[in-house]
Image (cartoon, rainbow, N blue to C red; front, top):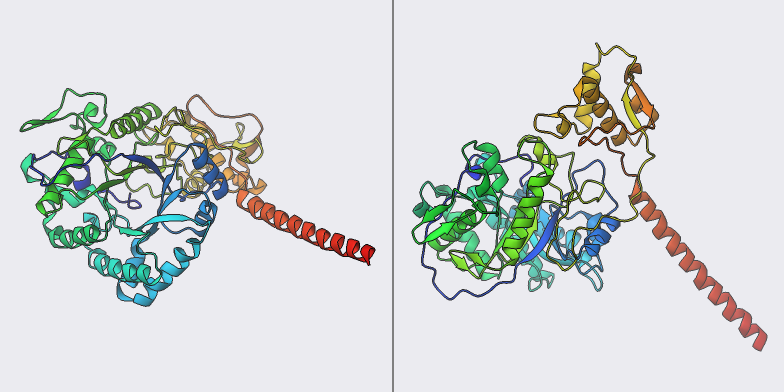
Length: 493
């Protein structure tokens, strides 16, 4: 999802038009991957994350940039990677072949070595055609694609890596089932884009969020957002749609067909359900949606317009909660993870990868079990500024309406804010002062569904130290072998 941005068009109830597709459909085995976002104050060591992916047999991961720590950790794992080019780089990459060459060299080529990262896609921009951007990035997309393609060719990587452009579902629209098409101002660039994708063997990537339709529209039928059956099915000619995902997906198929590319492979770049921050965002709803989605996609039934031909890949959004993301769309924006920030599964989910239910991250190093709470003996008349400071730096979205901590009372709210700030500051003793209003406790103040977190330690440092020790110990062994050889040589002489 574009950081902090959603549009009313993206949230509309999308209907479907029945069309006759040219060519013969082929069965496509769908695969499940995850989006690994890193906008967090509580990041696990990348090596821990890669171990988590391996333990859960997740073989496809999508990054929103080309984070060097993530890519180094992924080297040798065999996990298929999609790296991202941020929207703010599109102008530079579109105007300079040298800049494109440099970006590929620094962010792709250096990792594509024997035993390196398995980079398969480069996502050029992230939802660059959002209507709320008012065309800000639109003119840069095709030139950037052209320059990057040339750079991949120069680096002898064009046969291994495909360029793609993740699009939000607001790129296409439909007021009536028979009128599904790309937005008029996007018709030409979408024609150019899909022509480019098709000629290079790349899929069309789209992000679909039934949750947002339900969140924004009180008249949206809730059961239509899920996969458990509905009393609000959409009948369109001979076809009947029982969930919003299929309706949205086939609307894209219709739009692509109108451009002459009705059979281009489609990848779902983002899809999921948040667990907090809104009335309809909770653990149970997220479990039901994601499990229903996975079962539906892996059944390979396809959709009415693409029977037996589901999406090529589906990337769940997301792997972890990201409590430092913008909350412009809503408080839920920080709570999309199937795992919490510390790699612990939020609910029972079978990804259909032959691994059973989700497995938690191992060897996570936490800060000490202590919390910062408000002193029960202190007057709170001057607490407002401290509360604001804490919630500006840390995440307090669970305190908002619909959140899991919405009903813990005034002092509970303040304690939650103080503790969130305290943990972000790595439990620095001064970060719990708040002019004498805060105090450290060793008793867990969590209440019911409202969990007061304990942060994770700086594992990245530990990781680097460990690597250094391994290298040092290796050097010691080498020198011992040399001296042993010299010693034995002298004995012979």
